[in-house]
Image: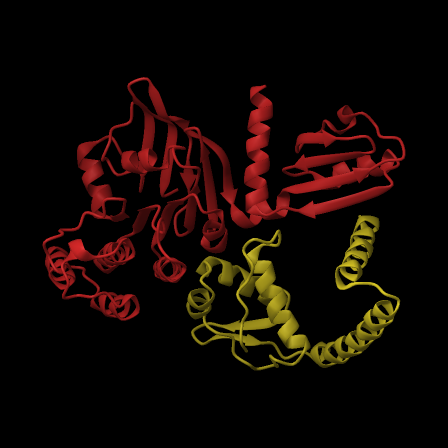
Length: 130
Length: 298
């Protein structure tokens, strides 16, 4: 997998960005069960971020059962029955999303307007969930 | 704590460069020491290394007192320093400088020397005095890292370097941290601190403005933007975590260091029409904290 450099100037902590990137890669099939992740040091140097940040992301992902860390040999994407189902769900969600965005575009909404609407809806949900 | 100071102060005549600084930097991390030019960063670093004596207050590095001559020697033995002056001999070539330094340190790491030489691509046959600022920084960094130090202290290591060199220097710091070296570097560039630091200490006018794990700061600081049909008075939001509040006709903007859930609950209880919780970047946290300091002065 090719990692993107996290955006340090984002409100989201870098370890969270890294976790999202790995989860997303699993969801779209760029990373599959049994695939090995780069070593902490290698990835830290490649992305020019603190090795502690990579370690934190890996340890959280391990905690969530997304990856397995085998001592001495590194981090691997965990085998998961849910992973396959999740991949299918995500691909369906992607289609739904595309339809919706297409519909909004046809009604004359611009990209930034769509994004704003989407984010407002998400934060509303978040606020209600509190 | 690898670095710890209590009420550390330095006066030059009537100028107070550092005014009661309380730093605590955990070991094994990359710590960014952030502040504007003239905030007291270099003076602090010079005191930590025993280059200047504190006017008052205490400081410890590796638990050793910085104002004790014997302890200070031990601190410097275990610490690599890359400062403004770079302490290089201009009449030597890069290669002579490396050979000379190598001969002084029995724990010299040849593998580091080789690897950094490959990456830094320094013109080894040229005299050091003909080196550009970036080359000098890289050479000083190589000499410190190959020595095998426990702590690396750098004063504005990326100042005046081009983006490619900055990336190479930051990469070397990441590698040092991966080897278990603690890194403490000063900078006035928020972006690079945000990129590689685990811990950030912000100094302003010789005092600590803000300090903590970068992830924790980013996860706890929030701006809460509120719109009301009938705006309540600001004092409704004087509660723990609220640093300060901005108001206009229909809305309030609350800057909080923590306790966001309670702020949101209060807003709902006061019939807010819109509640928007916005995460903040380090730049915003820094600038907002400066505003708070100005509010406190008024």
